[in-house]
Image (tube, rainbow, N blue to C red; front, side):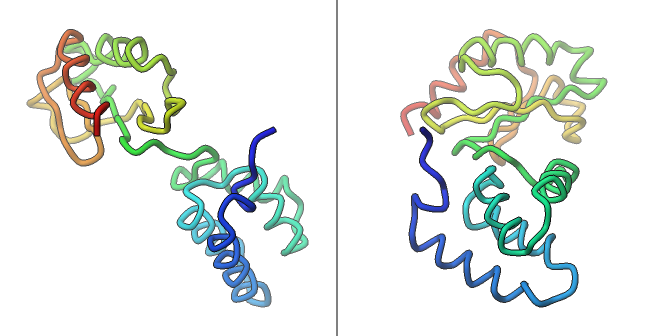
Length: 162
């Protein structure tokens, strides 16, 4: 059974309880509470959503609907390194899908997943605004351009030991 993020870190849970109390009586408390929850816990896991539902007396389906509707929210924790591979037109035409496929193979995860060690999260993105460097990927804030699938393993190796 997975450990609840609510019981994993008592300090974070106490901080979150204060957030709930601060917003509880106010109008439209859900969005700021969800934003703070994600800031505190790193994601809006089911246990966090259930806790919010109980405390605000809101159906869990409403909370889940908001959490999945807005792209700013994530239901799963993100890795230390967020890898975004551009699948915009210029990058796609120049082979970004092959780069993405190679990353999935090396990391042994699918798009949207995080490695078991919590190091890498792999995402497919739209235009990163570096079309002249196509195909492009970003690891956190670092841009890698003019990629070929054979470049990927060496780039990932730099981050594995950190």
